Image 1 (tube, helix red, strand yellow):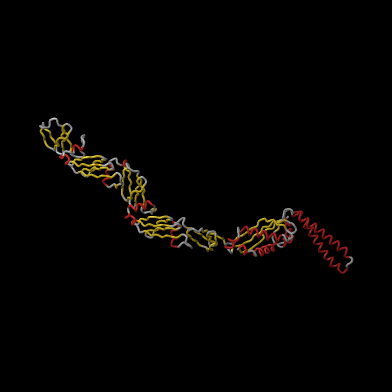
Image 2 (tube, rainbow, N blue to C red):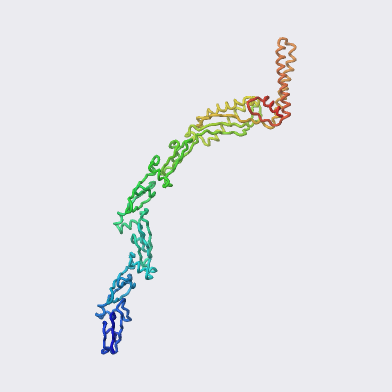
Length: 499
């Protein structure tokens, strides 16, 4: 009987469990192989046998035709045959035939993060290795900080990376290098471990109440307040302005075109063309601003603006009840016009200007009306306005205003004016009658004066007739409202004619 070993095959010959011979391709007679076992192998890939590899490797002929690889506990062996991935192997000792084709190997340290190149990407896509690894992809213009058990370990740039889950708790933080990065202790550790990276960044520190404006090639990119920042300088040239927001005065006009992007760092004060602006700093008056738009940085000092309206204003007293000298209660509607001339004095000295002017008008009106009888008051309406305007103009400097006009709109008599007028008329008639009686008694004894006295008595009698006329009017009317420039008789005559 003959034994045939084909090309690309090898035979391991065992006797009583021990390797006693190693045969290459060829034809062999069975002479000398009594009680021996032939184990024929195809000479490609891994040598697989139920015998221990170390025992087999004692045969030098066999050993010469094998690539023997030892894989430590923390390693992963990748096996390639003719540059084609053929398997992955964890801890152990392995032998691979090198009779047919070309073997190549790659060991991965499972305790380290490694970059997934094209070959590895193919391996990960074919084999179920993803479940055993944490992977991260770093896009262009990005970097990733790798943390092992929560502690910074290393930094990686463009590419795809993997690290075994077996030994550590892995985590990643990704940064877009086109935006600034806060320069903290982790970043300092990154530079300590990779000192060559520090030249790739501009480091800027911003103090409290400072503003950093970042630009590239003259184009605004962002604003940054208190802190320390890293700006990548490998893509574009960085430009920086650090502004002290406590500086005095307005914001430089060169920043006006980007102010809308600096929200929260400045205050805008708008003063209309009919206003004056009082700038208040830390509750203290700073200066008066003319109409326009002003911008100030929000520094330590608190700034606010008080807008003072300089236009013509009007204060109306509606239905003011005032007692005349003869104890008649009238209701007056009065108006005055004024404008603010000293905004600062108005701000410092006056609280609620409109209310203060309202009270001033009340006081002056009460003073004037209280000195006049009803008839005097009605016959001299124009004098009220003149008196009031003259008096309030004396207070202009105190209030920081100019009073321009004052006038009475209406005088409204009370509803019981009929009874009041009757009482007045009865009293006046009685007084006139007594006067006539006394004059008649003395008329006979004064011959030269009789004519004059009679003439005067005729006037008195005429006045008495007027009173009787008024009595008739009062009987026909109830409430009376008198306005205009006429006297009471003229006004009552008009009312009577309408009745």
